[in-house]
Length: 140
Image (tube, rainbow, N blue to C red; front, top):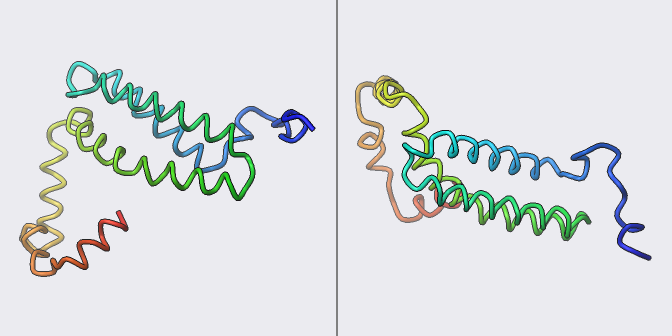
C-alpha cells in the first residue's frame, strides 16, 4: 500500500490541519506579517522572521509526516512546548513597537486601580516562594 492510499485526500484545502495546527499557523503568519511591517523599528526583526519561517517549515513537516492520532498528538505537543518560550520572547520584543505609546501607561493605571493604588508586583511580592514560582512557570 502506498502513502497516497493510506493518507486520505482532504476534501477542501486546509482540511488536513488540526485545530492546533491552524492556531500555530495563524500565529506564525500573523507575527511574521507584523515583523515585516515593523522591521525598521523592532530590534531583531529580521532574525525573528527567519525563526518564524523555520517554525513554519517544522510545522509543515509535522503536519505532513504525523497524520495518525497517537503519533500526531505527541509530535504536536512537543512542537507546542518548544514554541511557547519562543512566542513569549518574541512578543516581549515585538509588542512595544506595534502598539501606540499611550497603551502601556493605561494598562499600568488599570493595574493600579485593580490593586487599590498599589503596584501589583509589590502587592503580590509576599506570596512568592520557590514552589509557587516553579508551578507558575509550568503553567505559563
